[in-house]
Length: 65
Image (cartoon, helix red, strand yellow):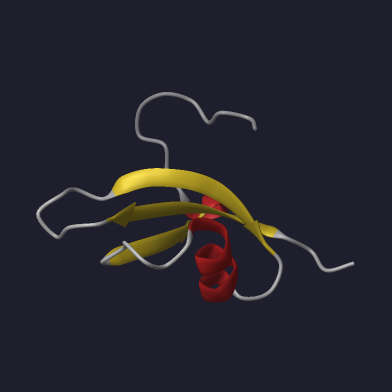
């Protein structure tokens, strides 16, 4: 079984909009392919994937999900 790595996915449908949190996604192989398969690719002008273990919490605490 392939180990999955969690990513936080952010996106926007217009460049005038801010990036918005879309979801947390567990990825086994290809971040790009698995993200597009999960959220679709038609309406996005930008999608960003950030490894969940790279997030630095400045205020608040890490939520356990």
